[in-house]
Image (cartoon, rainbow, N blue to C red; front, side, top):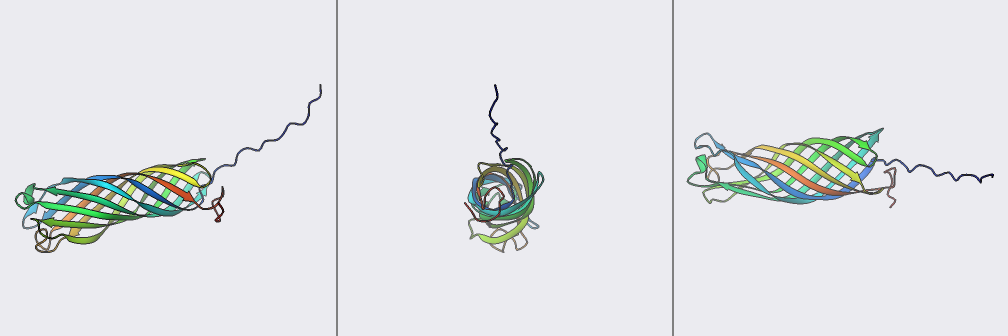
Length: 211
């Protein structure tokens, strides 16, 4: 018995990561700080931690299954900890930080809607330090960051990610009377685990500003 023509169903389009995006993120940070002073000695490493939340903006360009991009972010964070170890035994030394920003390159490999990536670049944060209950000395520090993550495209415009970043801020200087001598340095290192949600402008191609 003759059969009618079979309807052609085109394959679903392959997702493209190319495009500009904005998003939000949030998570937690844990790490350590250390007061170092040539006169009073070393406090030793002590734990510090807190939460963070903020946003990011970036762009990707896909070549085959490889994805290259750049991303900048800014987060509020509430890191705070005090130690009475080592040179801080009698006065107490406290480290705080309430914001963090990074500018990073990203490079990854995409399996359609799943992207595995590594990332690295510069980090900026305020580091506040004090000893003996004296006023905090605050300075903006420049360091480095590196990490990795996985991102999943929910649809043509929305994607969700989970990532880990290490941030190293080695040498925040403190003024005389705030946390020891004028040559005191305060190191802050962070391990960040956070999730994020991104909106990519444009349709499947990633270009334009269609919804």
